[in-house]
Amino acid sequence: MINKKYLIPVIALLVAIWIIPQQIFFGIVIGMALLALLMEIPPNDIVNKVKSLVDKFMR
Image (cartoon, rainbow, N blue to C red; front, side):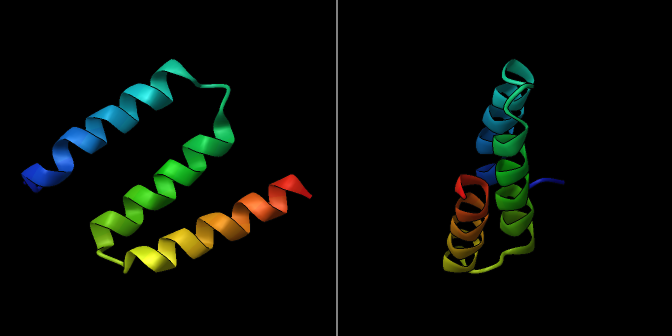
């Protein structure tokens, strides 16, 4: 059973991904953040990974 505190963000993210399918990059970032949430990785690790990804895409 999914923890209730994750339920609303998960639904919101799924809706966002469904509404904006062309935003694949954001889907990947959101997916990574979601995975990290479910695995309970410290948030600053997520932030660093997302920042490095964004840096790669912006170059």
